Amino acid sequence: MDILKNLTNGLGLNRKSLNPINVVHSYTREVDGHWYLSKRVGNRERVTFDMRLDSEKARALMLCAPFYMVCDRLGAMASRGNVLVTDADGNERASSADLRKLLSTPNPLQTWTGFIKQVELQLSAFGYCPIALVRATATSTPKAMWVVPAERFRLYGTGKLYAQYEAKDVIEKATIRTGMREDEVYTLQPYEYCLVYNSQFIIGDDKKHLIDFITPSDSLSSAVSNWTAAMAATHTLLVNGGPKGILYSDYTDEMGNSQLTRTEEREVMDRFQQNYGLVGQDYPILVTRYRLGWLPLDYNSDQLKLPETDERATKAICNALGVNYNLFDDAKYDNQESAKKGTYQDIVIPDSKKICEALTRSICRQGEFITMDFGDVECLQKDRRAMADTISQAASAYGKLVSDGLITIEEARQGLVEYIDIDPSSPLNITQND
Image (cartoon, rainbow, N blue to C red; front, side):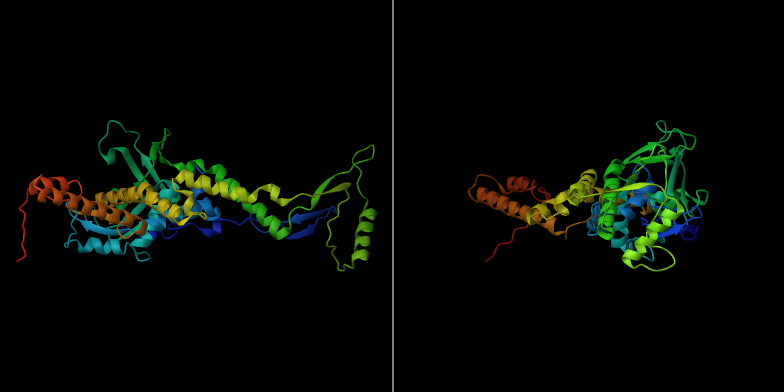
């Protein structure tokens, strides 16, 4: 089936659906004589997030810079891996040209580096990544692979779990929302998608048995909301100069609800125009007939702790996703290299194995295996140099023991098995120089 037609509107986040944070930019006068502030077209964007929902995580990726920054960094690190098609012994297969071609260009818009970066980004943000496979039959090699936005993907269970041993008995269907409405969905066949996840799955107890995923990013509601609110406050301070004061009720009469008359209101505006030379049909000053007082604010904006909120939110996001914060601050070079190495070992490489296992199970033929190699990553090559030094020292030590007659060559080869991959029982070819 042609999945591409059903994914036209579902391959990315619709930016038009995300309204920016609006600010007041004009004033209008209503028929009752009061002045009101008007807003731009559209609803004011919320600064609060419920990160338990996939739709809110997608919104956070668009609006919360630290959240996107950390997830994007993990994706960029994953894109350093070289993809290989091997046999069971790890040797590259020369007969898998069609599969290597698919992996080098998964779809018309992405190469492998862009594809794997998007997969890792979704794994970090959502805890799972659905991949749509464009193929003719269940056993044919796909013609293309597309990353499906997690907020548009739904997986439904049959309600049966512990007594089942086949996926078809556990998963009833998988769907992609192709339009803006919830009923605009496309149902995927089992061979038309692949699901990669690094989180814990949970099956709902409702009638639909929706399968959801619990991930550490679910706990970031406060951190993402605080950062967004802090940036909105910073924007207000920088652009509008911050709040100048507070209007309060100034009812001093016994009735407690006196207000300016129309004559008094006009007098205030005329006096303002006369003193400051403002002309025009509309007065650029907000006047109300209610009695109000003005309390000026005099405080240091540093007391809001906005930069500290930024740093705390970024650290909370890094801690939740398992990333060392030294990757994003002004740490020393050695600390940053150590942070990179730990991120590769703890997150990127384990995730790459999950991705390769899922793709191998979904698109590979018998005897084909997809693997990723990170041997050219600089921070990991230092370990290889240290390992080479260790092997050299071990070989020298065993060689001296053999030359001193303390052990045999076979015993030395048996000892070197702990350091290098050799078969100590294989024949040893020794060439002697004349």
